[in-house]
Image (tube, rainbow, N blue to C red):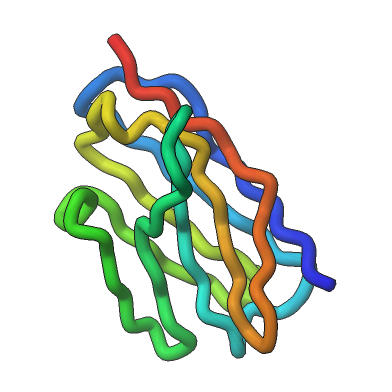
Length: 113
């Protein structure tokens, strides 16, 4: 079993930035790490993924604005979010994928003026 704890969410104005963190209870060295989000009334959607060798992929709606990164020594994955828009408002979840998939409990991001 793996525990994932997200942090860094909050209220930000449009155009602002936030940096989300996700700390795992064990090594993430051999795991694919991803971020997802879920807005009220909508299904959870994929945002970004970083592979074990650092290859990144992004959903089209965040390309050029969000950056996923990882620090294996700290068992942590990050999501740098820049130029935030009101439609980015959602609960953001971290996912660790190895032999099984594990989810964190999420962190709320609200983009509003």
